[in-house]
Length: 189
Image (tube, rainbow, N blue to C red):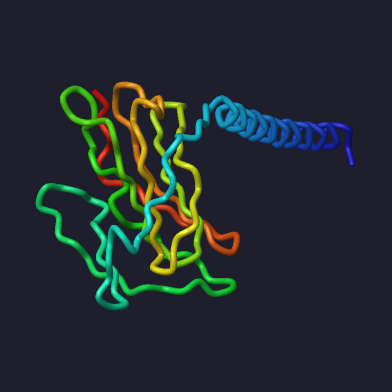
């Protein structure tokens, strides 16, 4: 093989090595930035009162449970959901319910809230609020035999500042998590 051919082959290998190395560096940099962004998020647990017993707030005449849609409005229609029992290895049902009782607290509106999460019985559930890089959440609670857990809490005590907060509920069971986003943001005045 001639020196010219060997030189071209070496140049091609060098260029290929440089391209692969550059791609790896870019991937490493992007991964690092995502990691740093996640570290910068402020996570705060919102204080709430003890869970409200379902037996006193939502008496059930049968094994069916009436829950509010995740799209609360003044004309919301209740939906019926069959009660479920947790089984080993089961994935939890996607959370539903009235994630916040008032989407516009503050000003002349009260700042006390009630949040409801409906999912598989025995699953752990929490409600999360996100604004920019700030994440606050209600403590995780285990759902009752009907798959429901309820929080009573105060917006001011939670430290939710003025602006739009995105709301989601996360249910976990057997190491598997599912979440649902509220279609409405919470507008703090």
